[in-house]
Length: 134
Image (cartoon, rainbow, N blue to C red; front, side):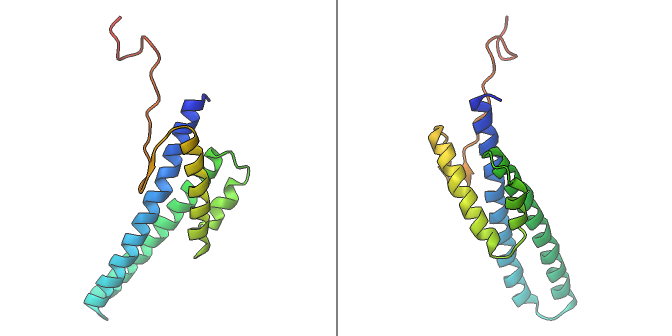
């Protein structure tokens, strides 16, 4: 894999856990405020079940993309990074450590990193590719 393709893969892998973590925060805040509004009713129970299902999905996605990000960074223990995403509070620390390493790697290759993660750079097409008439 070329250097550009490798950093593009890292940027793609790194952006997803950042977005999934944001989704988890929005889901948690939304479930808490919705739970306070509907109270102890059938609707409140359904909101709670929906929040639980959404939380499980986001935790699974965080674990998977944490594993992918660690692998893109060259870690041989990607499975351990992914496993740490399942542990409450440790997942925040794990995400911060992965984000720190991925941000440094992206910045070293000139990829801008913002609040929602890195800007994904599409791989360049070789000369004479589908974009050129020949």
